[in-house]
Length: 209
Image (tube, rainbow, N blue to C red):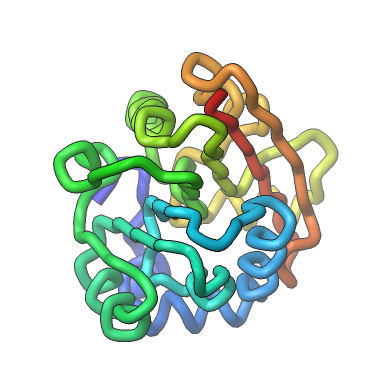
């Protein structure tokens, strides 16, 4: 458990795979997965993909079947659920983002982290981004998506985001600053249309030149 993760109230139940997946479907994260994969990952047949903080592996439903997928998550129940549902499509590892060097082998074409950085303190996040760069092939990409605070966003969106399970929600610029010392090329996009509740996402793409 990260020091930047809330565990009280409803958040406690989100550690249960079935509740987590049902809640994600309720707020429309299926649409988020679909658009994230189609608009930002640009996967090709044969690509090797590492999903850091993979949860119960729900994003696999939207990935091309021809990719070689590896998922890692700290929650052992998530990993067990992912393996039971998607064990024929990917390889799942129980482990912490900060200790990936001990369990992740080889190079990857794409490293993705769906809603992870806002669960990590700055140094943890920087270490994770640095490791992503280390294991990417030349020309590979790391792609991150997290809730964010932006000027002019609705008060309801800001209120909901402030109560997210991850306690380190940042601005798009702050997310970019986490990656700028590691990646020379970073791009951010801000989206407010990915779920069916008031919410703002920052999507950050980093290229390994």
